[in-house]
Figure 1: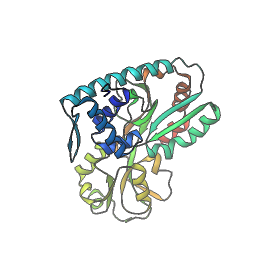
Figure 2 (figure 1 turned 90 degrees about the vertical axis):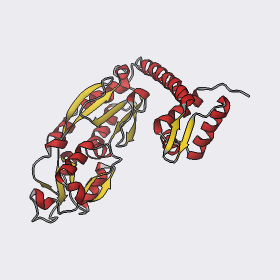
Figure 3 (figure 1 turned 30 degrees about the horizontal axis):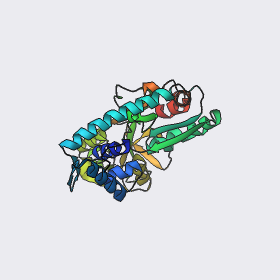
Figure 4 (figure 1 turned 180 degrees about the vertical axis):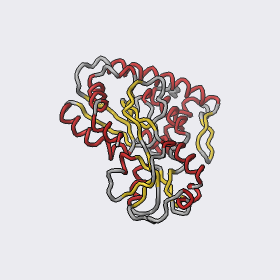
Length: 295
């Protein structure tokens, strides 16, 4: 029996360890739960040891599993570093660039700029990863990230595009007579779900008691925006998204406690890659993005 592991074996162990469950690992790998189950069982059969303890809450590495995952992580880092360095030698603005961002930024800020970028750089093919999860640039999940973040990871480089300002919005005419803070507590609220990495807004709502009036939560800012437009209740929304909508009404001043910087980030090894540089320069120099953030 061949009990030697190849990179695919190490990778499946790493994917499960990072995801914490088979279903999430399969989803992130673009595979299926049964396939991922068969693959990890085959790896364990090769080694003759159990790599993961199976719990109802997910998969947890055994001592042997932790060793295999540690080796897999070192291999992944070396492989990705090599790929980044090779990509950095490309002098032509052609090829694929993967960009990670959020649904609301894609909808309200980036789409027009992407159209202009395609006209100016026809040789660049763009793949967008639209998610509210933070992609790992060091593992090449994306080449560029456009994310709201207070402090970027120190191993990344980039520039601040501006500040995302936020305010309370409601459908125009929605309970127009109730406006002070105490009365707002009696109105239905919409907020971020616990699975959404939005601790600033969650803390702000809890501090004011609005979390107790929450009738619906979502893991998407664009989803909250749609719900406010439908008249379901009040929510804190980015001004770049809600302010241009004449069907919405802003209640009061900006909520400064949840303002956050918007960053354009990449890995240092990719900054000299022509196709990545072309995208960075275009989006980083966009006057439209800055103007919409400053509204």
